[in-house]
Image 1: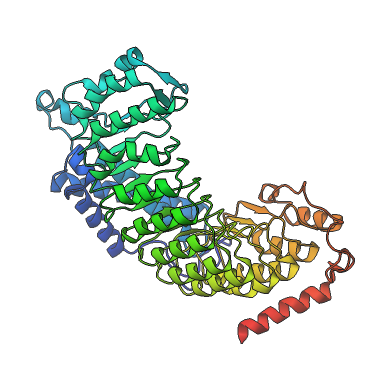
Image 2: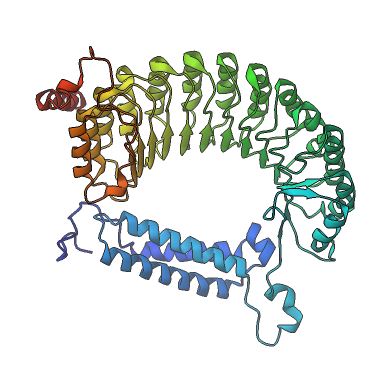
Length: 539
């Protein structure tokens, strides 16, 4: 396609991503053909297509996806065609998944002997959608009937949101025994709510013994107030697992003793990809045990240990263990008390996390020193980072230049949360400057940052014209009434992009502050700051 077109809505760019070359389209068809004919989770479950059928389907998928993306590009030209490429890839993935789940077509005349292939087979049994209630023996007998049918294909079960009594558990036990060789995913979250401790522990042990020896990919035991006793009640199941890829123990009362039991009872985590411990009372000593599990999980991609009462000592230990997890894509450590020492230790671990896409570090008490150390390291790693959260860390304008330098190196950012800090106008302007070239950013949260009119204006002007931008939250700041009017005028064409301002205090702040309300719209001062930023960038 020529770099210059007759469509005045399309700006000339030096690099065009759309349309893809014929060679690129051909390679994509070949790749999809290979996916439809190779052994995978889907082809094992639904069947493998013949080479001829796979090639035909792949060509059809690519043609449809290309036409859809090209039509979108013609209607809404986006410069380099990046949005069209994304839509093209998304449509290819969606249509390919439909074909994979459909499986091979049944030839005419073979329907009678191919009923099993042509009819979709149920693989997911879920009783969590109904009302949250106790379940007793008679109801369990009726509810679980499909699991007793000969030749059923269930590989995933979810018993969440129903509280099993002892008699219901005894009805369920032989069913689980009969299924354990085919089950791959088991969700037992919130399944003993309201039961006396003795009964709950016995129910857990019955389920554990019934599933012992199963080869699970995913196990969810969240929301069961397990504590150490509960963890050990599941001991036989946990000890028998050697292929776990996902383990969820959220809101389970995981104390230091329970954390030590988890570390002791899970013999193999070398295939673990997702480990989540949100909202427990783990503390520093428990964090030491969790750190041992993390050390033994080299393939970990998603680790969540938020709201677990971990202080500096545990934060340092956990951070050191994370240094071995070089495949991390998502890390959530929010709402702990790592402090500066924990932040410095974490920065060292982050240097090896080149694949990181989402990083949640809010409410860790990092302060300027911890935030600066992390930003300096993060600047040179995780090039594809999409989400960065560092809210509520007592970060001031002193750390803004380090944060801005880091953010400037993250062109794929879609969400940035620096709320509940003390960045003021000076820090906000620097962050805004760093975001100028970011075309993928969709959400920015800078609430409660002592921001006045000048900083709010620059930030608003930076984001308002960005394609696909969704929401700017600058509530809870010290923006004057005139500044609020100015913001509303900036967003007059896109009012939904500007979040609520009901907690803004136009008269707030320290009267002795150099950026007091009397001079917050001083254009000379603002211009000087921006000029200084440009000079610093050139240097």
